[in-house]
Length: 89
Image (cartoon, rainbow, N blue to C red; front, side, top):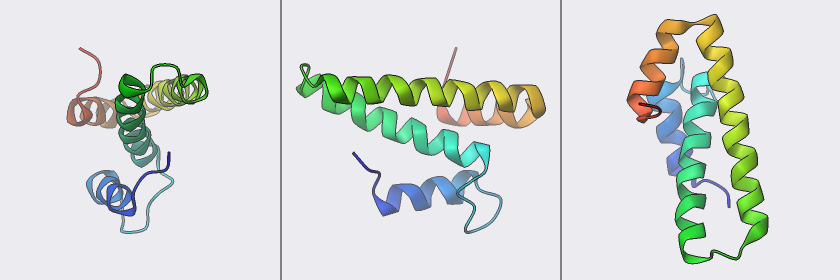
């Protein structure tokens, strides 16, 4: 399932450094988080959709890698992103 154009634009506006910034780590984490939320809702209704479940697990792993990178290279931005997205406790 792909993200809607409006969702991508919202993530870029909230986390991007400029209007067309879709490649920064913060924006990628935000877009992955939105996609993970969508897939989670989909899997609540379609619990036997194993292909989507695998895709969800891959995206969670990719987001974890991005979060580790951000925590290592820019701890201030890491704390801000985690706080704004409501990740971790």
